[in-house]
Image (cartoon, rainbow, N blue to C red; front, top):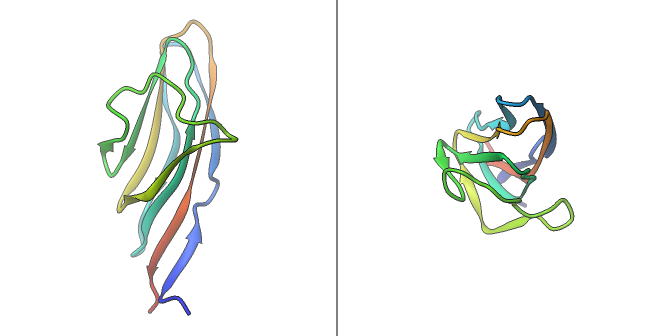
Length: 116
């Protein structure tokens, strides 16, 4: 029997329209309640004339400006060992294109904490 309480990340797939010249959070999760997040896979779609920020606990993952896809829906980037989050996981999209874009991201993992 495991000594941990584990739950999968809620709503791993999310999307958000971002208007031209704007930025928006397209994926965010706060880690709280004694849990620690373990990020297993990541997919984030990139578009021309845009860039993305992927941060775990306020620290950039993959550099400060991501200007390429991170994996795909069918073949996400895998983290082994997983990325560890104690506070927040956040993806922000910046749209410098001339059109509104529907950004999408899928981040899978688990939240775990010791059983009491």
